[in-house]
Image (cartoon, rainbow, N blue to C red; front, side, top):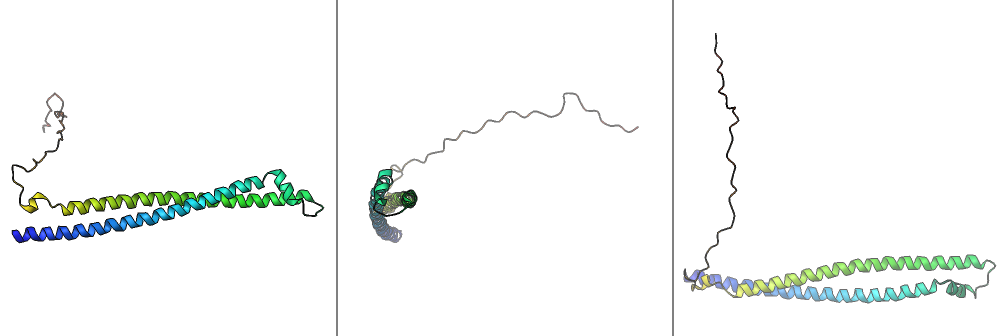
Length: 175
């Protein structure tokens, strides 16, 4: 019996060490994800600045100013072309911003998952290092927690009714 307890203790310690390594692995993963999230945030900031610049460039007076130095006989067509070019750039920018927003959401969810896994692994490692009292042989019936019975009520059924009518049935007689 003593060998069994010692073996169980050694196994629990080894498993606890493995869970502690898992916790460190999950924490490192969460840190890498946080670094990626910072990069995404920086890119979002750059794109927001570029969007503000495009909004400024799309103002009619700025479009007029940008094409004023170009010699042409059809200035209206040149202004329309410039406006369409800026609008295409802004649409592409909005797509990039939407993609980064989706990436941000995925990264935040992944970080939360990694942090939860690290917490669970740490808790499992602590639980494995704190061996239960029964494995140490110190648990007595007086200190053992009483087993709880489930608090489930039995369903009362209604009394069954007979399907037969109150009149007696006539038997068929052969004559």
